[in-house]
Image (cartoon, rainbow, N blue to C red; front, side, top):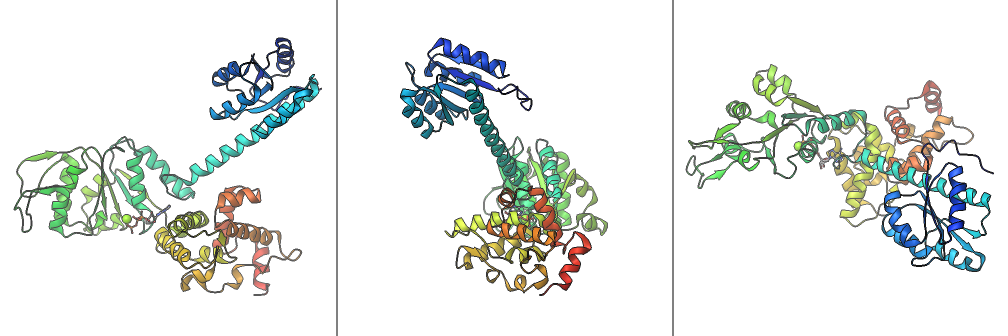
Length: 475
Ligand SMILES: Nc1ncnc2c1ncn2[C@@H]1O[C@H](COP(=O)(O)OP(=O)(O)OP(=O)(O)O)[C@@H](O)[C@H]1O
Ligand SMILES: [Mg+2]
């Protein structure tokens, strides 16, 4: 006899479906005694109705019942999205029907008359499977969530801090200044701010302040009246007007002229402006997001950027980390871009050849994510087979790096650290850089993989033991 399961925190819910009242009641008593929460139904139709409010974890269902039989109940329950495990109950004469139900997805079956022990064992096994399924599902969702904040790939603590600020600042009207080197994803963050905000259904308008001359930029931002300057043929609405109710993203804000800085300051302070050559004052409701790869604070000190405007823009500041400081994200980015460009070019890339990931980890990525995106696109285009290899990388990344990789991590012969490193890199290569898949295969956490990758990228990490091995290793 099984004891009450102490590891079950909440009572698990069981639905017992049988047209024989006595059989139902007997089961109910046994299961209740075992600590389950039990509800009964007299046929499939009644069960289906109950399932929607009761949401059982397991269903013990008779195969033959009036109105709706057990198999139909199972199929209908699945259609309604239930993931409950099904255990069919059947008289010996209709075992075939129970087997059919298993083909349709039932977990197991019991032959009547029921043996109490068998019921409990089979039920507990079925529930265990469900728990596992749900855990895996949750894990997958958590992994997906962690890697997908508005299509922004990366899990490094510095990035997570950025996501946090974005989530907190997005619902407000506060102006956000996004800083970071070129290619770190400033534009993606600006979009995420808009998408996370209540303005998401209103326009997101972008202006690249570095791309236009002062005159053109002014009319681009504020619009102009007919004939206000040479070339102003008709009247034109500016980006501030177009963004009304939404978000205006001023990219490369560090590049605007002193005169425009004054005009921008006024809009920020008074929320009003005039079109170029216009007399009437326009009012708009715009949320401003600005970005630059310049060191704006230094520009302020150097007198090139107005301090008052800087403080107006810098209500909330977000700084994106350069890729070289978060190398643990490299495999996830590689996997993301391989998938993206694999689809775009109709190529199925399944993995990376040994050593390829090491080369990618060793590079310093001055062009940040944009650079790795370009490198991976190029590699996908050049790839001759289903594996990317270092020949598909630009020459600057290739180079033989004999010491980067312990030669084969011999067993016995290599340290446990080396063997682990080999296992992690090989697995990551096999799955095209997907840290979540590698973690699943290796049975370790994504965190641990990323932690190790950082060590490898920084040239070894753990212990002089390994460093000594590497320096004497054949290579
Ligand atoms: N974390 C990321 N995950 C996925 N893609 C990214 C990520 N960061 C950047 N990218 C991609 O890299 C490219 C460059 O990003 P983005 O244009 O946002 O950079 P930026 O910081 O604005 O650069 P610049 O200062 O040069 O304008 C884009 O194609 C973008 O989609
Ligand atoms: Mg940009």
